Image (spheres, helix red, strand yellow):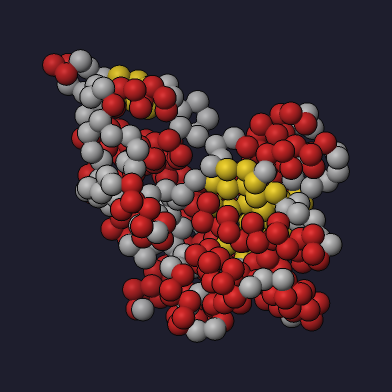
Length: 363
């Protein structure tokens, strides 16, 4: 059993934000069994950006948090995933369960809830109406970016305006203390915190993980106003842009080709997608060290022990982008090889993956 301070350290490690850290500390002091969740749309093939929240899910489970994994099937349907084909959405949910297993999540210790179960309960819809009663239309529209869409995109159909209220209702319906998600889910968690008091519900703590920038990066934009205008949905790693996204199934040659084409300006750490992969994927592996091979005439190979050391040497020009990219390919391939082998050896997982590939291509 982890001591309280060790639990806290484990829960906040490698996170982008805690909303709020003081609230998290407070609920931990109550020494009760805490309930947390992450809701995931079954929306396509698993990419390495998702490995970030998977690691945090695993750590929360290790900290003794009773975690629920909500397969947000109806949310995916609202969000037009697989063109609203519910059979494909359910197949994708089953595939994601296999991805979690391959990544070391103990599925038997995870409470898996399908959105289909919640929407069949009349109490859920009564709760959703109560939530909606305390939210303005303008507030709802601002929160629709949690769907990976720009605010203007919700004009497509009215169902998308229901989505944020659904996500808040999920949190209350599952009686949660903690909500896990990427920083793109912040608005939904803030809505839940704002509405909680009005509905006499627990105000949940939001644990937010980093989002990987797509391999295209921000390009040559350095003006802060330009960066601010670029919504996160334009730059985060997304399976809808496969050439700028690394999937956990990609072989070493594919990874090399994608990384070689990635935006990776010399001496620049901020907004550098290759550096982000090293920081959020590689250096979060136990006892990881980044080995950068270089010819003797350039000083020979170097081994970097941590992210801070990498940043210093890269800014100073001691590490060249091409050498950094090759080191990233080698290290990332070592991590992904066991995942690929899992899908090769597990027939059900392989069949689900192949069916999703076929579905994606046909659409």
